[in-house]
Length: 237
Image (cartoon, rainbow, N blue to C red):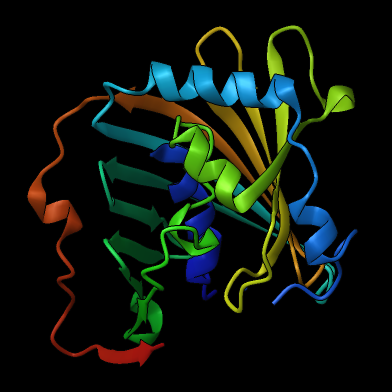
């Protein structure tokens, strides 16, 4: 199964946590909403805790619930992140793919079809694209997050040990592809445990993160866009 690069972009905004058809409010109303003070405090704690973190390595289990095909697609994989702008996410067989982001460029490699899709992102620092949603729970700059998301605490989804943060994009961007992201943060360790992405298609992606390791050395080869010589490269702008 082909896994779209923008599902991976959810992990990357969390580490440093797309035309949307249905919004609860219009752009002007959403942009004037005040962020939840409790959520902002937690974001600042995450930012402070991860200030000295340069690399993050972890594994994940993913379940994609498809409204079109009425099925669940389960995947597993591992990810690598190196500040400020290098991210790689490998999905294991049977849904094998390699997703790489370096700066403003991303590559999606699907071995089964021998194809690489190359994406060039906007250079706009306030773009939702630049805050990968899998990185939202790893202490990206609070100011950067609040520039592109309205953030609230979901009381019904939280407990004494875990807080659920909801991130809703403030702006309608052509490549966003999702309505909201909810990230469950472990209060003791200040690390994300689960991410739920509500996509514009009606599908839902649930990512459970495990074996997170901080400040481990990552080989430069991990972030090099090197693919087999027989693949087709398609540039998408």
